[in-house]
Length: 462
Image (cartoon, rainbow, N blue to C red):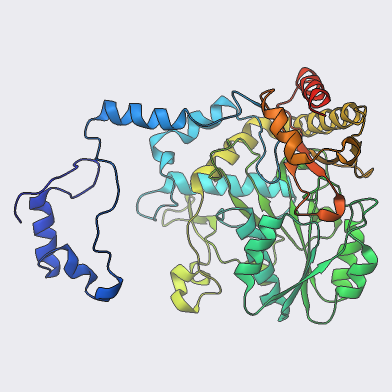
């Protein structure tokens, strides 16, 4: 092998003797034999411009902490940014439990080892089912976008149809995931929203739904924060046309807002990020899908499910996988969809959060969010040139128009950073018809003093 540099222990199996044994086992002379199928013309012959490895733990830690120190975070700034990943309370007990050794690597587990994780995931499903007023949930999905896309594919299989109707004002990132995931066999039709209310245009829904429609999917609350008060009517339109009614919902709202099942949803989905999970550079997400206890629907779930089952000992029960053959794990290429990475640790965290909060805690949290966001919108409307875009009821997020200030949202947000305030999301490019508008998010983490600080900062900037 010759003299080699190693970076052990940071790269597993990097000791030359270990590498030699592994190469011999697979019949290779050196590492490049493993890439024999890659044409010579595609191989990079140069030297990558990488820094020298850091070989001691202390220096490595100092280096990483220095990189992290460059970030601006919500401990240093007052944050009003949401749009799918908002700042919510993370109770200390959530990190205490998910940091335990048996949960920290909670990548599902197999029947011979991880009964504890299976029980924890079963409890997550039970708690989420109670919150959503539905019976069946699968293992957590990668994120909310994946949950929405798979919900539509479930609906397509259930109905044998190949179109889905979605709102124009749906979260653009989720819509992009859906477009990518539904290609090439399921097409998307967009329906307009009422520029006066921010709600879905019912007449346009009626025009767009046809005998090809597998489902109508709506967000409630919507990406723009508006509560779809006519969601029940949209559900009726879907069912009358033989389509599924899918509702993408924010679980933190369900302490004060009726769950989708109570206004006709056949499939509920969303992201459980608000339930005790921190904002970690886009990684603290986890998708969920829920349905009623109907085998037609259960058989269309692509992911693992966990249930209670009898054991070989009379009167003894354990936790196990349900209908395993339904998944791509069980049926491989014949599976309905591929089942991939699960966000198990965040599901367990969400279960801890829901256990801690209980029905009363969820109600109080939802009420606090409603009150603080309403207070914020009214205080911000007092600023000259600033107005609330939609008069409709909203939850957590609302759209502010800055057209009257003569300044762009981009310039205003840049000015707010000088006051150590992160403003709302600039949606002027996503929704040019709304002018210079910004999506502001107010959660239970904000106080009246925080709102007044925001008001004062905007006054100075505009």
